[in-house]
Length: 60
Image (cartoon, rainbow, N blue to C red):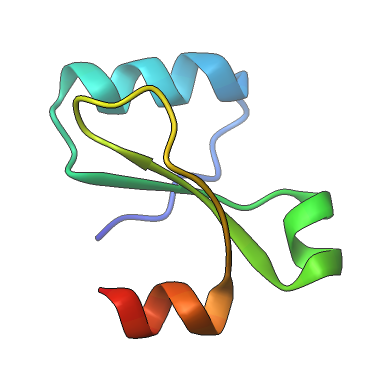
């Protein structure tokens, strides 16, 4: 697991992780923090969707 807080654009960081074949990418922005959710991207899929944080933790 790694936390990426570099000053790069979000699209760049997501693309970089896709190329590295990271199994799950969790995107947390202001919107997700306010709604207590997480945006999930699974390797090989464009986007899995947004999940309630507790639901996602239970799912994995």
